[in-house]
Amino acid sequence: DVKVTQSSRYLVKRTGEKVFLECVQDMDHENMFWYRQDPGLGLRLIYFSYDVKMKEKGDIPEGYSVSREKKERFSLILESASTNQTSMYLCASSFAYGLSSYEQYFGPGTRLTVT
Amino acid sequence: SQKIEQNSEALNIQEGKTATLTCNYTNYSPAYLQWYRQDPGRGPVFLLLIRENEKEKRKERLKVTFDTTLKQSLFHITASQPADSATYLCALVNLSNTGKLIFGQGTTLQVKP
Image (cartoon, rainbow over all chains, first blue to last red; front, side, top):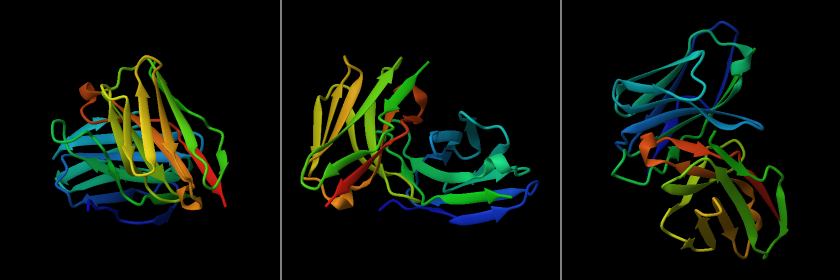
């Protein structure tokens, strides 16, 4: 079974802190994604990585950065957390084009609260 | 602009009935359409996908249809059970998008015993 794990289920941080959210997948997937999910707004893509050290901005990249140094690990960084970044953060992974139909496998999510 | 819509109102049905959820899209020509299930506080779980050249796909009690003329997919759960209560998301795949999906906001299904 595909397994995607996230470093924390719940996290509380203060405004201005630097926050690291980590995601690890064990299926050798090329693609990895970070989303945030808010009531009424659905899943919104923050960043996407299709290979090690490669990244692409999603729909809402402002205030976030990412790092992918190893294939299995994709980190989301909030350089200076703000209260409007309080949300559920979901990591996902998938095979690359030609190897699948792009079905994504999600981690359990990190509920981040910024106070 | 591209848009994908699911009924934002919750769907309440009686156990044993068939639940039907709708996914409509505009300004888009997806190669595949996927359906996911999401339980509260958890990540979505992939259920089914249907390709643009397929009219219908089945998996156990689940059935998905895809009408590229109407730009609509219907997701059916037959003989529904309380355990089917969850939010169901549809997602579109455009092969030129390098693996990115566009998700609908989801429809919450409540199956009452």
